[in-house]
Image (cartoon, rainbow, N blue to C red):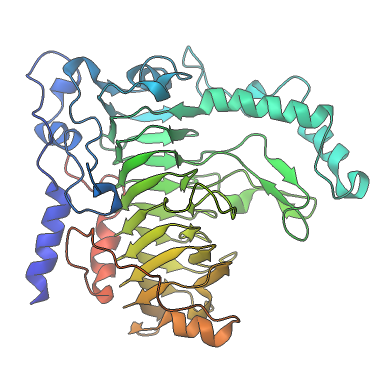
Length: 451
């Protein structure tokens, strides 16, 4: 009886919703020379009941864009222009806009299309060698860096932010055509509700000027600034069928300074600063460290009652932590596929302050050395709902595992078993976890949608 259900689910994923608005009448523009399937995909809204982003008014993105605001872009300058023309002010442009990305858009590209390096963005007074010599804990001590070199680093960060942080305004859909890539940049969705991002590969949103934080942990840490997608102070955001990777610049290849890895990457998809009503579906997160942070800090304040996020049918492949890490939010995590293990793996689900994770029917394929008890991590939370999980360790058979019971048997204090809510915004029936390797593995990520 399950086979028809799987077929119907796959068809629903590939066809999805009825377009929220009719495609523009044919003319000679690049957008109107796209295939019917690409134009149809661009006009799609989030289906009803498809996670928290379907709450209330739902998420339609730029489905109502006029022909004048329907664009095909090939580089950074064209992307900024399609979003409104002025990167500093584009976040306030609420006109519906539909943008197709064709080819590779590199954030490290100058106005004339010339490639930029980190050295091109550095303040003249900043040099990494000088920074390392000045703030070595053996010389500087365990206090926050201050003075001219730190000020120069901060100015360098401001230069990079103007270059590689692309501001997205409300009522926007960004869709990648086959093979589309966004390299070395951040899509910043800040105070910009009703946004859809689909079918893009995000590569290496690197920070040229990481900050040394000597009081972060027992021995200090390097911290970077740039996520691949950052959702802040926004509602109704749908992130679907994208791939997130560090490409040929993985964290494992970075040097160590002051005995800590020189961290040049931050999150893949962070939802912070009171954002809410976000659905992330059918994405592929590959070989990344800090993946998804939901909630800005442990401070009780505006985030309470916000940060409502749904994660379904995503593939977490070789990632190390924050899958996701949650504070405060009601976060629905169901029918996701995890392939985890190897050097540096820390945990999957981070249970943070006042978090309310509802984890149902997820599949975990683990290296032989990963204990299911370590898939959860207590970041100051007290409870979560977890049910229907399946685990395969090494070459062993897949089997149902009560992850919460395994965690509580190995750690103190125990986590409670009731997150205090039950999800209602789910478009399709929840599938048995045992089926997810057959479904999510082949279909999650960019270039799986019909175009």
